Length: 327
Length: 263
Image (cartoon, rainbow over all chains, first blue to last red; front, top):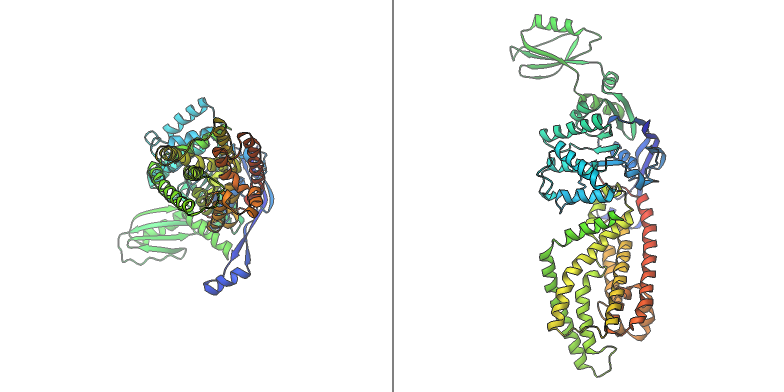
């Protein structure tokens, strides 16, 4: 069953514009000029139950607007949108009961209160029974190692600790759908791994449908089989990571560690991407030159200490997609 | 319902943490109360005309005003202001709560919690040392309690209307400055309404602001008969209902045009 259906979603904002300087300010008093910003320009996709989808795009592409529309926060200008059969902004209260939301840059916990009091408040707001609450809290405490944090006021938590608590807060009512808006932003490596592992667990073990927006491509590579790329309010690509790679580029990268720093290297079928001392990164098209052939040719001609082949990092792929779209 | 009560409870816990602010507030209110009493003392001594209230009554009125100052709707909830400015309002909108009542509960806690904390010591000190009187009868006291409850719901509903305007103005500085003198003057905080000229009385009587302060105080003093407090309470509720309807209508429009800032 499709959990989420989005069809031809359009959202335009009116933004008041003011010219710079004193004169601009005075003119703004008399005459306001408005600029229309097209945040979403016909976005369509469908999500099945239990999918974990990465939703990525450059800043201002429309990621958050989509998520906020799906969450019932924003009312779109036109288009259709249904989550579990409900139109989010029309049946907001019933809709949001099925939803867990984490905005990485904000917290839903009460700043002045110990974490556990925020959780108890959310329990009452969502009408979670005492029995379910106890069970969920025990599970979340274990999975997210919240033990010592629960009695700490939120303002004293580190960012990583806070994010773990925020994740717990979004899940107390056991929502079948979870929206994560940049959940790893600003986190250290250990905290990022903890968050990823937890999200993976939720998706695999509990079958929670997850939409994850992020700028961190490691998040995407670790978690998502399906990636939707958005730019300028339109969907640029929707599919598996591999399909995305194939669409944008088939090239591989060959990374060589040479014996000698000063050695000049050249090959007709490969292009030097960068060079750091001994390390040379080459890119080539495996359709034009088989990888094995290129390696044997290069190792025969140059003294190579070590080498490996890899796909271009996902950042590179995405950046290319953004540039194509902008051009 | 449980969710809303839990919200009020949590806000109370947060607000009751600020004990130093409460102590400072008590000091300030006692100080300004003394000054106001002295002004009226000078006024009564220098005037031979009969005044609309006795000196004893005015002293009690002033101390009641100092004790109940926190109930007056003169300032916005800074948390809500920040939420709208920063876009954190997003989290408020993903709760399965009606946003109006959610924020009404916040407003209720914001008015009542600090006032509970401050009014008891101010009234106790004023009664013991500063000339404040008890109500003339138990019935007047009960009428005062009733109309004070009316004032609380009225004040919150009025403040919610001001809060909702933030969806259009965002900062709320301007509207706050416009609202403050209105409330201050027409509620009786600046000067008991009885002292205003006769030609103004019909207007003062009609406006909702007297229900915020002047009315409960006059019931306390016995100037409004205890039985009369019941229909007056009805008028407070009518105004409350009007503010709620207006606030909800505007909020519905405000959330539709919402541009969740940032993020």
